[in-house]
Amino acid sequence: RAFGDDHPYTLIAIHNLGDILMALGRLDEAEPYCREAEQGLRRVRGDDHPSTLYSIYNLGYLLQLQGKLDAAEPYFREALEQRRRVLGDDHPETMSTIEAIGHLLQLQGRLDEAEPFFREALEHRRRVLGDDNPETVRLVDSMCNLLQTRVALEEAEPYFREALEGRRRVLGDDHPDTLSALFRMGDLLQLERRYEEAEPYLRESLERRPRALGDDHPDTLHSFHLLGWVLRGQDKMDEAEACTREALERRRRVLGDDDQRTLESIYQMGQFLQEQSRWTESEPFVREAWE
Image 1 (cartoon, rainbow, N blue to C red):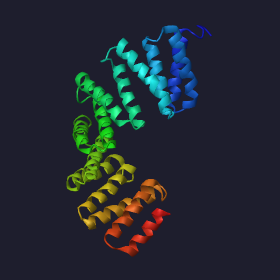
Image 2 (image 1 turned 90 degrees about the vertical axis):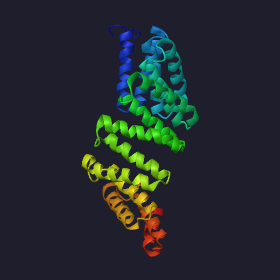
Image 3 (image 1 turned 30 degrees about the vertical axis):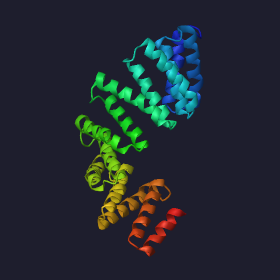
Image 4 (image 1 turned 60 degrees about the vertical axis):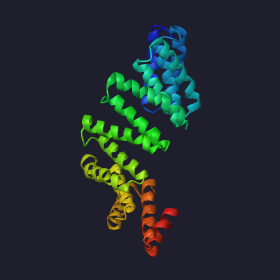
């Protein structure tokens, strides 16, 4: 009313309202504001203005959140091309866009294309911010996820170890992010069938998670579940059975019988008993999981 529709103050207010609605998860309500801001800022401030570039990036991010991955990609790529030219390769917003394209390509299943974007962003974070900066640690996590998804487990291992060591050093042993990294290190090793090496990570995870998160937290229950699997892989059958039963009983109580994680425990219990030729005991678990 005071400045008109095309005044930069008005356009930034429109942009900010779209941002708030995105943060609240009201994505369909956010979209018209994000589009109006992007088109208005292009018209008023030009394609190269930093606020225009942010609105282009933001619209891409909104489309990604809506699951419109193909529609999001040209906005991210335009934002990156312009930010490299206008702001430079080392600007934080340029780096955020490089990382965003990596995540988008990963969501599209284009893992080989995603990797160079993650590597460039990580190299920059290390150089500019240092190894212990939270942004660097988060990008190490992104590399872990990408390489694990590609089943490049040997290549992923040093990144998993770096993420765990960095979080222990910066956040402490009992921080939830450290505990997540600890669990994931054990999970990676069990995927490689290195069960003896995985066991101490999962035992430490199971020791610390109840203190930090509570006995019935889903992550605590997941530690029980995976430790049972790792013990089973080492033929430590009595301990494996106790862990598997504990995970199943707690998941039934906390998550309910129909939660996917509970069903996973029911099926694992059936498998475990089958492997020991305990057919009569196994059958009800296998039937329940199947039904």
